[in-house]
Length: 227
Image 1 (tube, helix red, strand yellow):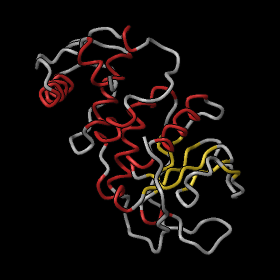
Image 2: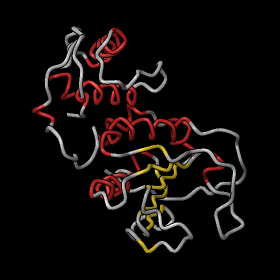
Image 3: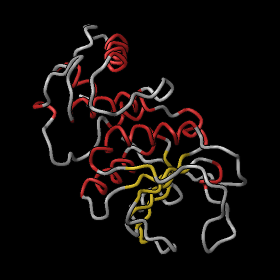
């Protein structure tokens, strides 16, 4: 873990979201989509409300990670992003009326007085290096499968699933696989373990050095969840 030092402000709109912000969002949806996490946007060519400065959304370097208001895991995630900001190239996080910034890296969370209280999302800003190079696989390596888990089975209790399986565990695996490999065609998160999901599991197993059988058992779950 390490704290990022420095801040690169936005200068002009670029026309599209950065690959690093898209990677963080893909990981977030895979890790927290089942707990109410949602995509509230990356690219938006606009200024910062109440100022004359360009928002980092205009350079595609800011991701708004939507969270249920009051969710305990959201603060856990915000703290983890700050604690690992150097590894991830994150230069600012705003959540629940508080801000951490690489401009004051060791000041911790400070009061945020902007026009939006950010109670329904984490606003996460990337350095230019992170915006250009961060991958969902790297986020997975640093943060694992997510922060504090919500209601549901613990990692060790997840069932073995294979082609023909259906249900919430299949949907979870599909979300995580989409987060790990955002450059590949997106799996339908439908809870139906069909041939496309089996092929993606085998792809992941081969890259992870696991037995390539297309079955998500304890070892494959452990790797998917960052263990």
